[in-house]
Image (cartoon, helix red, strand yellow):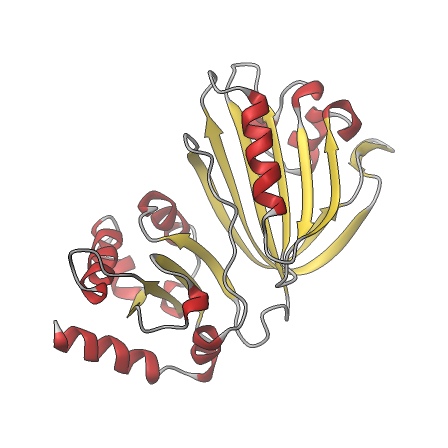
Length: 269
């Protein structure tokens, strides 16, 4: 155990300045929590791209559809779709995410709409988000757009499909330069193994990605807990992916602002 602790601590201290900024960041990583029965459908990282942040309802423009007002952001994004069972009350889901967004540190709510005031659900689903699974009745949709203390944008859209399932789309958009010298690609609860594996399987060039794992002691030491998290993640990866991706077990020796029981992926450039 002591050898593992020294190895992890030494590795963290010997990283490049890019990684040191991650450990010393004064802003804790933020996330929107999952509704209790939400199941991940897909999660897609997008890097070095332009993103339109909607700031008004969607409307027909010429032959297409677009929000009446947008701001364009250059940067990266993680776009995740969740499904919630058909027996869950829509009001419960909407209330949960409304509170979750307002609980983001330093949040600024840029736009919010409900029901028909958002415009056409079909247009949001198929023209803006390019995901037909989001299509439902205009009267059951909700959209929030917010910015947090780290200047990350959050675009959250939910609706109930005709089949009854509630679909929730969460886009975190990270503008270039918002994290100074560190670009956090994604951050997850360390026990959310399916979502972590999906993120890695859809990422390009794993040789440039480092995963920081933070943990806290239970009946085991924090280091052993972190080792188990890494082992659980690696178990479902291919031999090639395991060879390319690098994990650093910070245990409970990182900055408390990083949080506990987290996996934080950065691009090591």
